[in-house]
Image (cartoon, rainbow, N blue to C red):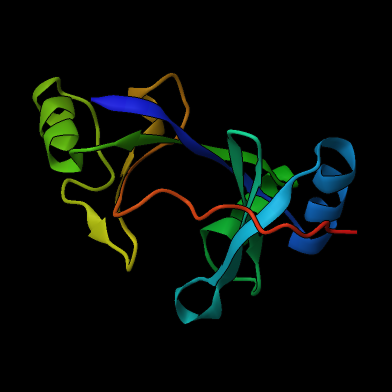
Length: 144
């Protein structure tokens, strides 16, 4: 069963600028920064209270995030739901006849994830994520 929104993914032109804006407006702070496979994009996870956002910044002109930015100018990309049993969620959704992008979860160093096709959920891309552990606590620093 999904048990909370893990994060909301937002494609941005400049993750540092997005962080500055969200930090000034709502005191978001960096939780983690990661590079995408092949250097195609970078991800910056930011948090304020119980809200986590994922800024996805394309680093090349290739790939889905670059295409998204070019076509839409950025914005909401996906909603990620946390689950304790991602394989069960995928099996249940498939049995319901829902279109899946990933029928098996992808393994990352700290999590497993899979995507549900937007056509299955009112044109919203859904990510399911099963984390080995929750996000680390925010550092006691202020981003300016």
